[in-house]
Image 1 (cartoon, rainbow, N blue to C red):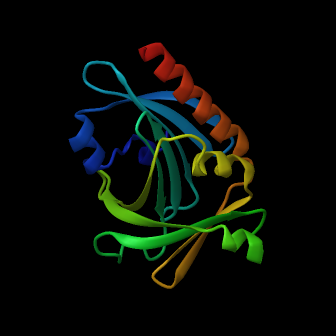
Image 2: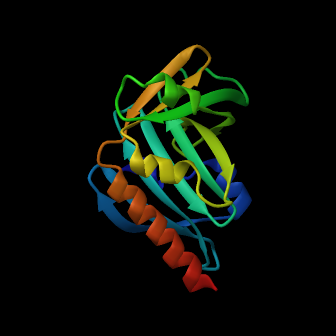
Length: 175
């Protein structure tokens, strides 16, 4: 299993204590894991894909929130929270309609145990959101500080389906 999946950001470790990673499934280039806390209670599920040594995308679900973490050119240079706009499209060239549906959000910088800097977008877990859009899209575009990062989501539908199913299964088991 790739090290980036096992690398839990310090912010999450501080909030949720020591987490244990449990491999769950693999879907194409995506690896899905679940996390439990020290008491063995389910905390979250994550799907992650590494595009290169410097670029990656991670999507996590917990009872309270969904997160999209991204790593790529320009993220390392950012200081503190920053504004990011993201949208989904079928391909690299998005339409005006797809860009008009862009979501403006704040991204916080997080650092993994390995010292990798990631940007994190947090959405409250209140029904369908960006995670469901990821399952349908061909690309996600993230615009910040004059840069636009493009991540290929081809074949991500099965990974997002597994992510959603694992989260549902684990939260149901906890009740």
